[in-house]
Amino acid sequence: MPVHPTQPLTVEGISQLVEDDILRRGLKVGERYFTADEAGKRFGVSRTQAHRAFQLLGRRHLLVSTPR
Image (cartoon, rainbow, N blue to C red; front, side):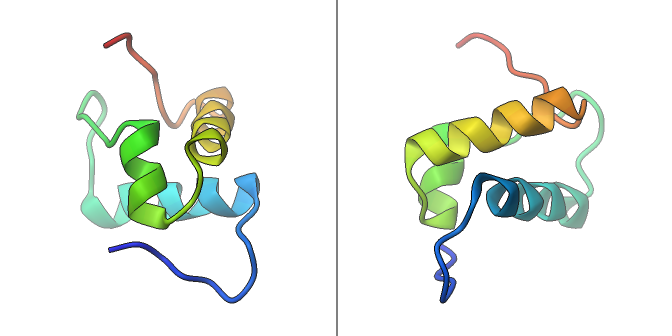
């Protein structure tokens, strides 16, 4: 279900949505989350914005990217 905010989401805002979603789901270390493409669709943002948000979460050690 895409999110439709009244204001455009920033990369920081997207990363917060992803972080909240991870916590709400109770994901454990090593469990798979959505790809940036999938998260972009889920949150109704561009693929580029979702990718940048994932990079930000990676720098915070909240997500680890693995090659496909």
